[in-house]
Image (cartoon, rainbow, N blue to C red; front, side, top):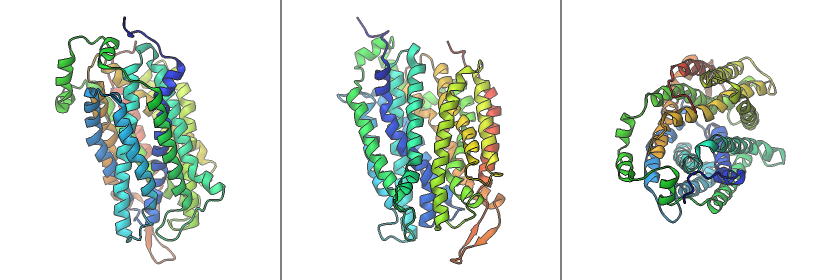
Length: 453
């Protein structure tokens, strides 16, 4: 007798993804505060996007390897959990070090280099910790319950984002200092990373204690795999061969992903600078006004998460998945473009609610379409790892082009009180993000997949 058709209870599915809540707090802290940290350390706005090259580059290398290795890992700790533990432990260590980049008596260049290495390790470890949660749902949840399981995971993901984005604002509100000596990071940001690290390790430990992965025999019975194990093992060892054999939908969805993640890198990279100028009227990264804009960026990203949660309830109402996907991205494009015209911090809530619509679709639609296209594949983990490259590559391209685009389309040079000259107009990068999402919305209709059952 096998467990092939068993259903999981709500709480079993909740436990399966609960660690994602803590991991997403870490990812939200990174997304909302990295540009603020580097600008505070002394990075030039023209080179700010270059600090985002290493993280996705490492993701392109690490994620396919983790996917392929975990497809073949069977040990006492489980199949996917060993990689979850390693990624989480490294993330916690880096979260303690990164916000202290300016506290080790280093020169500006050395502090920026140290921060860049920490960012690379943080992004790599967070992604290494994220992937196992998606893979465990694929491993342990039957087809009838997968939609519900991924919905629970999406809820925990957005809830974690909400908490992580708000941390600096909340710490400032309770009286933790939001300013710091030149070249150092405000305590409100530092303590946000400390508390986020504690929550991360506790949430991952909870999932680790509550979830027992299948052994090879149970897994084979659950997925109707009999004598194909040898073929599966041989196939999953050659990532280039898998990539060559990937269905057309893999590449078609990847094109949409390219324009989406190209846009969102500029949101993470340039929102603080854009609203500091458009709302607070400053381009000086060392000013108190700029730090207030940094806190407000976290609030806006939290609003984006709320918009994502609400729009996730609307998406299933679309009869055609591609129409829902495209409309979501167009709404996000409107949100990005509107930031150029809005100079009130509260009116920006509307912009970021709309951006949240695009984010909801980006979290759900690509994986749903890809899973349908890969139905029957015996190397799901490997393909998910390879698919992560469609997230990483556009961020690398966007980061490399960021300085050139800003220099070309940004505003005038502004001389600060310190005598330094800084270019204004970071808001133009959000306009470019909006244009990129329009291209993504058009590319959606080039996707050809099987009809979902």
